[in-house]
Length: 226
Ligand code: ATP
Image (cartoon, rainbow, N blue to C red):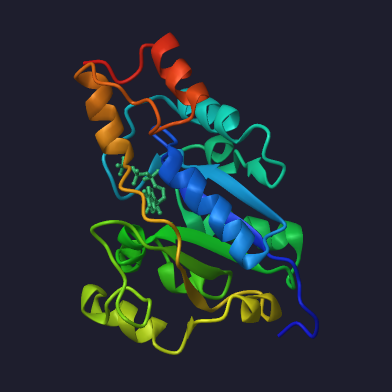
């Protein structure tokens, strides 16, 4: 426990294939709600639990770099790309903990769809010793009346691990370096990278789903065309 409030650091991992307003808006709202001193966007190298990304690493990183430009709290963290190979969040969080110190508050951000699959992640239980989790609701993965993913949606081992960790107070997160789970009431935006890729492939507009910098970059580099 920290004796005094410590301004937390947010960690937002994703494939970002491409980055879109769903990502950017939840990052902005969570940063404000939790009082993050920074939100680190960490593009995955090769994600373990899904089909390989369609755009190259360089393109995905570049799209994130341009999309967050101008937001002083948003930072691009390229460690998973630099590390190479399959990306494990546990390695990223261990490194950050070592770099930033044992007392720093780390908040790992996931959408509700990603969180309910947490027990499939590499060394997932270790994550609770390294960071808090901040869950953002996502259309199709709504939260229960207690503002959590419904217990029925969680596999039993995850539900048991989480049971004593839920908190409804964002303030309390600042007093412990990790170990708690908080669900954030962020604006529901039914935007997914999959739908964006499909729209591009079929020649449809993605205007207002992604920043203009992302839209321009996709067009200039001819990404996601079949
Ligand atoms: P894809 O459609 O390719 O699976 P995605 O849109 O889910 O991609 P990712 O880069 O895989 O994007 O997502 C990174 C993180 O952001 C995940 O934790 C995911 O749950 C969350 N996320 C993505 N889009 C949203 C959204 N619209 N609302 C809430 N969370 C989101």
